[in-house]
Amino acid sequence: MALRLYDTLTKEKRDFAPLDPSRVRMYVCGPTVYDFAHIGNARPVIVFDVLFRLLRHLYGENHVKYVRNITDVDDKINDRAARDYPGLPLNESIRKVTEQTERQFHDDVDALGCLRPTVQPRATEHIGEMRTIIDRLVEGGFAYVADDHVLFSPGAMNAANSVLPRYGALANRSLDEMIAGARVDVAPYKRDATDFVLWKPSKPGEPSWQSPAGIATQGRPGWHIECSAMSWKHLGETFDIHGGGIDLVFPHHENEVAQSCCAFHTERMAQTWMHNGFLQVEGEKMSKSLGNFFTIDQLLRQRSFGSNKWHGYVLRLSMLTAHYRQPIDWTIERLVEARKSLRDWIDTAYGTEPQSLEPPDELLSVLEDDLNTPGVIAVMHGLNKEARNSPESAEKLHRAMKFMGIWNGERTDDIYGYGYDVGDGPSRHEVEPLIEARTAARARKDFKESDRIRDELAAMGIAIKDGKDSDGKPVTTWEIAR
Image (cartoon, rainbow, N blue to C red; front, side, top):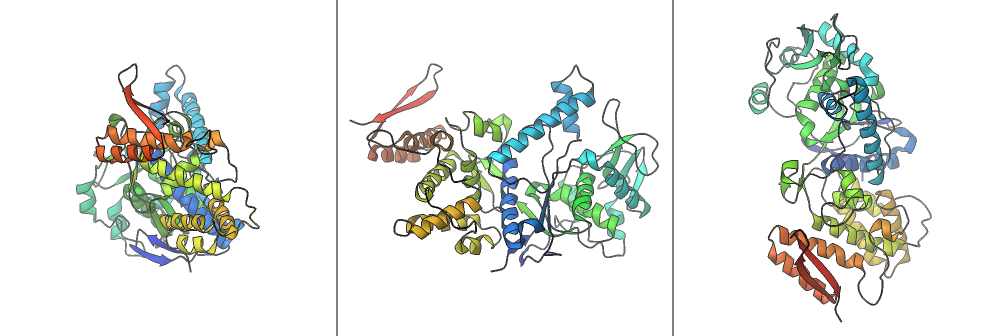
């Protein structure tokens, strides 16, 4: 079947047809490098990595260009730099923060099994393109200068009699609805409430560049103009796919469309807009105040979210258990189930020798339906079951796992959290995930689930004992019943 993708703008699933099949182009909003990436940031990274892999398969590895930007100029970066390095000049401390955070981001997403994008541009390397776009917007009457700021006017965009889209079409809201439903910065130099900043003056010590539009003082760009400039530089005025989290639809992506279409007089910025759904942790919005905020680094390398580290392939597979457009509830049970599935599949596929790297047809048929990853997982479960009587299915499973980025062909006990049974009973890798899931169930007072897991452990011949540690916190120990 043909690749079909859901377009946020048209609210429909359509056959994907690139503007030029010899150079398929995709842009995805990347991190603002002021802090370590959290598990919510991992979702679009994984989702669009799967799409990147699929596009490379369909159109050829050398015919797909994937751009994911690095935002390295932002108020949050300035604040973090001043906090972490108060004794250094601000520009020097900003460099320390951005370099460390960007390096950590790359390490984290590599561990999640993601391919590196074709290009990873930094915002500070594209100031010239930003100034060019801003000058065009001012000359076209879509932006204006006030108090050394340059502001974009959505009202002017909607009043233009041309091919331009309506401001608010992506978010499917009118100007009045956007004013009522969003926080709008109030400033005396703004003509209308919805006008947004393209450029602003820099404060003393902040990063600064020559300003556009004839402004004498030095300044720095607003957030939205950065992505318009980087996508234009690397993909052109119009390209195939623009992706990101659902939280970016308004105002960020709406403003990108406005800037780019008005600067280049085009009807569309991207042919297809794709957005992944929200992520919750154990049924609640992720928040540091609730104690359920986890960075990718914490999950990979520290004892957090349960009593164990989680391998990147487990994190990746658990993220793929929900369709990308749907919300996902990030739970220990979801991780435990993903780790169990991955263990089973590796036990089946290990030792097979794929004759090619081509993904199985049955996997492609569901993945091409708007990245139906739950369907892909069902296919892999089916191949795993068939493999008991079919070596061919085991080999297909091997190829499927590699294509989806959830296995590299190795089987290492201490890295993957699954491996070989020790002694005459279940291995710790079978028992400990269940202990973790039961602990989580008890913490949220889900005693029915806690009892169910206890009974499952008992059926496995495992005796458990609940107690408290030296700090008075609940702890569970276990042993093989004799």
